[in-house]
Length: 289
Ligand code: PAF
Image (cartoon, rainbow, N blue to C red; front, side, top):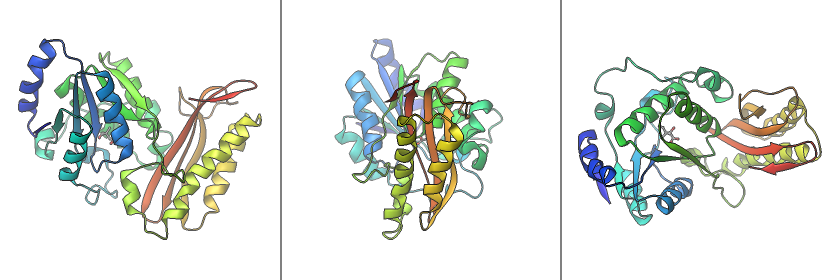
């Protein structure tokens, strides 16, 4: 694996590979890698000739009171993990390399960025869409891999790629969980040993929502309230939102039908955690997506 920090060096490295017809995959990350990221790298490795992983904590997607400064970073460990999983190129630019001057151009998908996490994190998805567009232009991958845990992020990126005719296949990789159901996340490091058992309430609440759907419930408010009640009754946990939404709009339909996401965000101690389950809801059946 080679490690590159400059955009020009990355372009010079990838140009001959692209010209000789190699299929290039990009795995964009903010580092502090865990098994969830490694599942992205493994999927990319299995289906492409060249795997590029980026590690960049993107200041543009953090609000002024969020955890940009304290977001966990360990590039050496990340590099070792990526190498073990067969990554070819690690792109780890500095903030100055990515943003040499204040940005005057942004990419936005407002309709999909304002519900769910957008309510408490205004500007977050604009920062994500903008940095992902920059990474797509820098790497020019054939395909890019994202985790389903960030379900709203995947929806925003898919729509951006479609609307702007970016010739890139977007692959969403299933959530990797701890044995007790907690979704793997770099932010789990913020949980103290006392808080950690309470963090499983997000998964438990999603399972509760899923059971309701499986028993025939189709009213989004009823599913939402059941999930919200469970999260709110957990000690040390503060609900941000619990929602049952259509995957097309990320808003609740009148009745749940077709591609549906149950999504939860909650604060466990100092950590804001998110999780979701994606299902196809039919009249008499519910299939996990
Ligand atoms: O999912 C993430 O880690 C980030 O939002 C991404 C896609 C790497 C953009 O900074």
